[in-house]
Image (cartoon, rainbow, N blue to C red; front, side, top):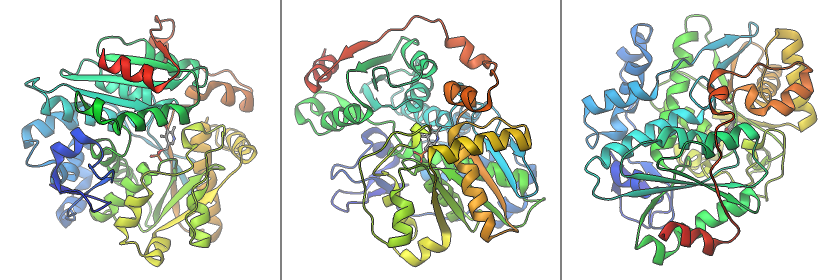
Length: 430
Ligand SMILES: *Cc1c(COP(=O)(O)O)cnc(C)c1O
């Protein structure tokens, strides 16, 4: 599959090159040149297919021929070595739990898939690649875990000192090997700005191959489309009108759901559920796209003022506002509403949701008010213990730590403290 740049000022390129480069030379996001719906037989026989078989069929066209089919089979099997259960709350609402991976965040799937693709492209170890990534919390852990031990790939993670949870910090600073953590005296925005400066620094990029592992990278973004098909497999015999509510930040996840729709997934509507960072909610009412600096919330993985994948969503619907509006609704909720929702989910359904999932739940409720016959699935994007302080404070009950989390607690933290871009550059060149 070839990919084109959404800035339309760079040549088309292969999947391999799109993964290794991350962004096109004109700074545009890459987008696949064509999307061929899966055959009817695929959807008709989905009950008999395993998750790996589904994933293989769904992603094949986007990665071939550069990744041969037998290799791709192994990659998806290794990527998907945990479960993706749908849990029913009532007749109208279920949750799709995406937190059963090694770092208990949905980003595990994209990170593991991308790591294996890069590992394959680098198998002869000719060109070392450095994955440079800024994290506000969850991305760092998933990328560290996914890329650990991948030959020919070095990972450098920037995180804001004192602004990620203890669990998240352990997940990204204790692995060693090819994973390096840089603790930045500053905010997440400062980390992201340093990463952007690095990608634009010709002196640096002429000496090393840098790539990103955020959802701008097609190999991180596209495998997320699996989730929606996995949920459909579990629910299609029970409900006719399934919709998804996706707690959204950079809009990579919801955009991947729309790619599944393009592959023929019979889903007519998506709900982008936002916290106070609501540029898309506002856009859908006013048709004015006005990014703002992000504000801090309790669902901090969604504290994004200018969602990087929204341009891909516009491409999917051919930049037609009316088509977009038919396919997506968006709602925005405050932290107080989110806390109330966490308590309601706990009291009414005896289910512990994390703040991001709770925002998704609120999106379902808002949509169901107008569409009472739908079955709304909200994505639980992180395990509640990753946001332990908020969760225990709201539901007033201590949460047991899952084994994945216990495994990293108490390990030795190794990080290198930096304050300026110059220090980042010296670190990368040393
Ligand atoms: C990254 C993340 C999100 C937002 O996903 P996007 O694809 O950026 O919209 C939501 N919840 C959690 C827990 C996350 O880590």
